[in-house]
Each structure stands twice: as C-alpha cells, then as structure tokens.
Length: 178
Figure 1 (spheres, rainbow, N blue to C red):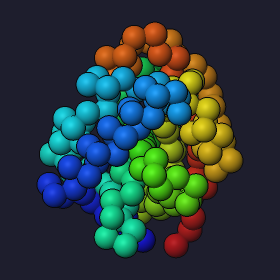
Figure 2 (cartoon, rainbow, N blue to C red):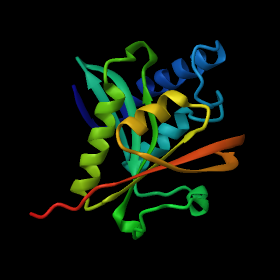
Figure 3 (tube, rainbow, N blue to C red):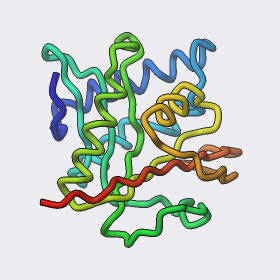
C-alpha cells in the first residue's frame, strides 16, 4: 500500500469513489452529509490536482482512498475557537478524505491520517486541522480515536450544501528536536 500525489489518470478512480459514497448515502447505507453533483464532484478532485495537493492511496494497484492535504483553511475556520494558536504557515489541513466503501474496515482511513500527520511534520507544521459534517459519526469517531479534538460546531452553508453543522477538529503535534 502506498500514498502519493495523484495524477491525471487517478481522477476517474477518485470520481468513482465519490459516486459510490453518494450512492450509499442515497440508499441510506451511510450518512456523510454530502450531496451528489454538489460536493464532492469530479471538479473537486480536478481543482486539487491542479493545485498539486491531491493524494491517493493505492493497494495492489487499485485506488482505495483519496484526500486533499494543504495549508488552505476554509473561510468557516475563522469562526472556530481553535485551542492551539498557530501561524498560518504552521497549520496543515486535511480535506475530503474518502475511502472506497467496498474497501472499508481495512484501516485505510487510519493509515491516510497517519500519512497526513507525517506530511505535516515534514513541512514544519505542528497544528493539524480538519472538519466533518456533524452527521458523519463514523469519521468523527475515527478522528477522536486518533487524538483529534472536536473544538466546536459551525452552522453554515459548506461547499454549497445548506444547513451544515460543521464540526471542526484539531490536533497539535509536539515539536521534535533534530
């Protein structure tokens, strides 16, 4: 299993994962809080690819997960009561972590978050931030188990989805001496 920056050839697989998640939500098999044709979409992945911050996880040649990792804090974050003060250049953000539903319960989400934390360290960031919809209880449990603290809920229109209760999470990485 490996995680690397996505390429143009990965977009179809990422879109397939998004569609599978939307299918599951529409059938009542999962609750994420996403809306088909609104977020996430193929354009979500294409925009991240263009910025160079789209990552994929491959296992035996198959794309099983994807995420966006960068230092872009969404506008809604300015309303959060972050516990760890940090300069913008010390903050890394995980966006839109998706795992193929047909590959669930294999530890891919946990592995991707560990990659995100290592990526942040390698880029000199000690403050980790992310968000999820309040409805996404599975992600919230995973993040809490991995040491992320829910620091608040922001009611907003998020990624063009109305009436979202956005849960903001953070974790602080202790600085290590070289």
